[in-house]
Image (cartoon, each protein chain N blue to C red):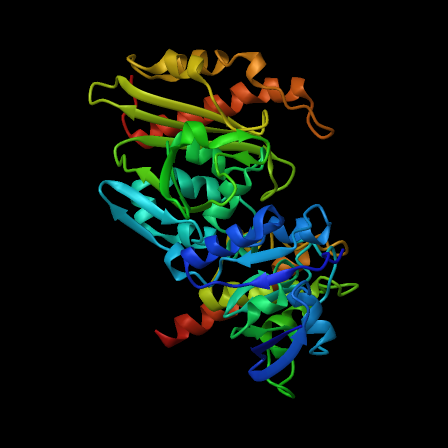
Length: 162
Length: 291
């Protein structure tokens, strides 16, 4: 067993793990955060997407021990506790961008990373950002529309400032 | 879908990584970005007893110009290469290719050296490395050796890297005036290619082609150069007619792969089409469109 210390959603956490445990499994089993979903467990579906030091990555393709010292954000950490849904999550609801919800945490985090780097991302950038996330319910169009809503709102705010 | 047990070390230097490998032998595996090895572990296609994590070795991650060569550390993330101004200037083909490799979250972890050392026959980066005539810097406890691109890819998932060795850097000769193009067909954006084609052209001021490299990927166990196609172009003015003739000169026997989602006949049919498109893009990129 290897002791691993990391920051998750702004809080320090420590756990013992076998080296073979994936970060995704550790987030769910050791840290009890089950918002990170595991679909394929070999890097194809994108459901387990998290932010590792601010970048969207697949948590099933990392060992938990590799996250030593890292700062991780999961779906539970995208908004402050009791702060309600983020603008992106609200747009998902308004646009019916989810049905079964299995892919949603991964979608939200992939888009969250995109908007952090590029608040006014266009449709091509949005589609590229979620190109590695599979959704079997929506046909993607409502997800893209929800993201475009956020992009437009960011654009409006930026143009009001200037 | 859970890996078999293994031990884990995360050395901080190249020397320590190689020492671990020497101590443990062939049951040890280097872990780079993990975008191929982690699925192989999960599917138990790979069952190492020791995983040597390279992610803590800072000296394996860099992009710099040195002696007229673009030097990229083996652990440099694919996303970092895609965003690099130096790469855009000296080896834009690498960025054209990387846009087709996986997705932003896989490129955030996946490395240049990991993909090249893995040598998947359908991968795009080996095609680019061959077209760019990259040199591969390989370290062992005995020292350092450099392998040319033409000698590096030796078979399906097989490279010139020997037991006890670690790929540390690739070096690409800068050719700012050359033009390049890359085309592929894949089932979905970001998937491995069914067939890919890279073209690299150096064109003189009078429009004559002075050097040409055409490489096909996913047509056999390794990426392959097409000397017949290259010979069609070198020393002649390059235009649409010449490009079409050169693309049609690909010998059918160069294309062996035959799989469930793409027959050999299909690959033989699309290889010249992709080659023509890649050459056309390379000519345009060289900015010397002949009449």
